[in-house]
Length: 140
Image 1 (cartoon, helix red, strand yellow):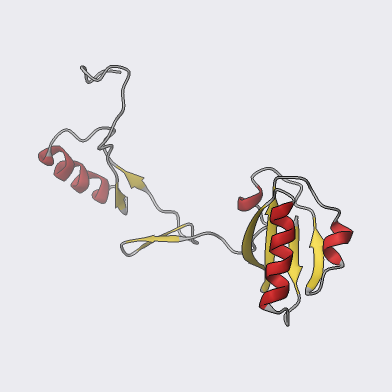
Image 2 (image 1 turned 30 degrees about the vertical axis):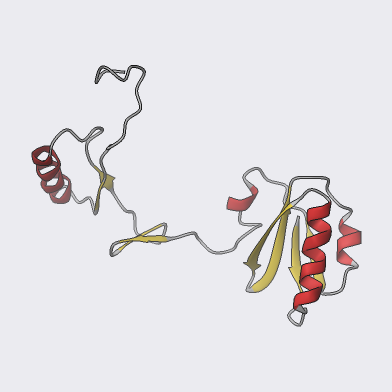
């Protein structure tokens, strides 16, 4: 469930809410929802939303009824973005990442870097650790 907190909630009231959710066996994550502080409570025994809504500092309680709750728009309004060097992944631009399945030599990586850059890729990736079926042969 998503618990939207009142703007003037005290730290003690927020900790009391988190404590009750954790005692019910839930994992609690702090986030923002529509520009407001919120708590997402996942797993465990779902408490009655009316019980949580009656707690001091709670503005609203909403169920998160989709799989992959932490990645859902019900949990967070904003896109998740990360920066790798000067490249933003998850933003408005499509980022092409390419490279060899398995790194075999420095020469191979350098040649691949030139080729993927010329093709428009902005990030070079390469498999440097490849657990395989047999540790004694390259082929899995």
